[in-house]
Length: 366
Image (cartoon, rainbow, N blue to C red; front, side, top):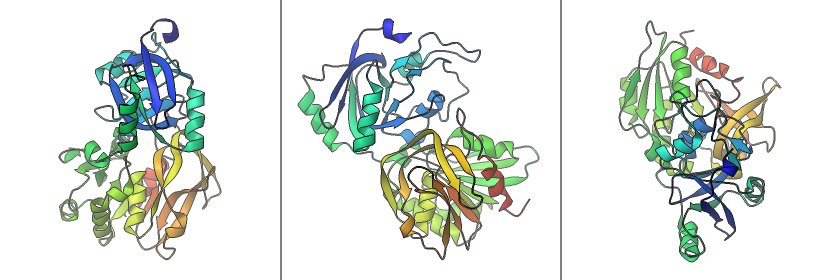
């Protein structure tokens, strides 16, 4: 295991000046980001390539990461969007028939700086108690550059998150004998979303996040999915305006993650930043319509303020079992609904994937 094989020092420093000394893996250098933690035990490759983690330094609460390796099939996007990676221990000898390399080589390939052999339990408690906090990982001597780094930490903000993760041009995916034609507005979309739609017999057109409504409507799609993605929803006014315009055509719509929040904002609701967000594959969600509780995968720092919802237009359908935040909304006068959690998740729970079928049923073709 890695704890005994590598000795080069690395440092993690929080915005409050707290320093953790550990060891380096992955790329060398310095990286700044917003420090968050995820409770997922598996799916680390999917986590690192999920656009929703753009600009963030990810801490894994599970103590051993990398034991089944990495491969070319489990990417959720074409690159790693996380700014840095923090683990207690990483496995340098993975064992799995699908493995094509280890996590250290994966991070080096994508130029991501990692640190291990620190007290991730202590770091997680700090984030839980004080909220998401800016942090820096460096393989340089942090003590010599402390004041300069603290200045950068105090000034750091995640900017242009959606613009950095969306596709640059329209992409199309076809299915022989397709039953549906679906548009996806890419706010940082995971590949697994597209796979779910294609698996259900959909032709899929993926549009860049800032595509005008008239261009999407010209495609004459059966429905539109607003994907998950990173960053502050308040910085997505252009996307919210597009959703509002598309709603006028009463197109069958489904929002996930950031798409869920922006759909609500298009209807007049307001977002709020959560203390430390929901990141991981074990978040309980209660379906208020059926009384059933689901274990879900989530990755977000923002949520819809329940009291800001227009009850004449929207109805909360799901709530988080821990903090009661709004996790699902249905639209009274539209063929539309949205969820804050991830309906499918490679490397996570999949018991809410039927929501894709519910979305397709809104198209009237089923």
